[in-house]
Image (cartoon, rainbow, N blue to C red; front, side, top):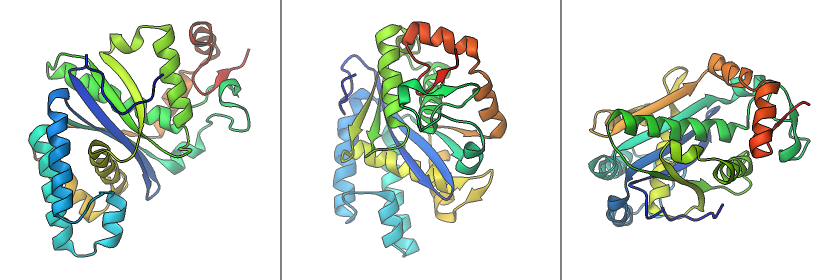
Length: 273
């Protein structure tokens, strides 16, 4: 898979995503918009963050350095407005790290392509990223937005599970039409630095600090309320223990053998013979 930050020219929609790990939670969040609007949105974002003295923008850095509540609200209000005025959807998936750790996952002492497992979860990044863009695809279908989607996720430095995710996407693309069947044109990883990924970073931070099932940071809740009160779509999935058990239970030896036959792997883990 060619890893680039640019969206495919054939895509009607582009989603930019990022991961956040904080407060005992991990989230992957994505902002989806029409391909035709992203250049203007990025230009406005860059101009606004520069005018507000918050460029380059990194949500965790901004919150740790800016303690004045009025100033925080001023900056976030302006940035959220850019998103809600032009984009279509905020999509995210969130998991409690402690719960995820209790369930059997990949055996990391073995190479990614030869891990022995049975009834195990895929890597956390694969689970969350898959859920995030699945929500986006379903939202487009439900709201009659017809067209192909390109997804770009921020590439982290040795980010846990991201190599498995990249390998998963490449094998699916090379061995089946599954992505196209779900109206996904491309899924790529891109280095940090673009305005679009700064927006995704902000959304991912909000999703690890606003977890209504267990934890609510007041500032994050204030920001999420503004997103949810706008015209932009808002889709979120919290992966609780029961959901994770169901995901792991689907990884039966029979499923593993079928995936190996088609793709040469079960994507970051391998079923026992």
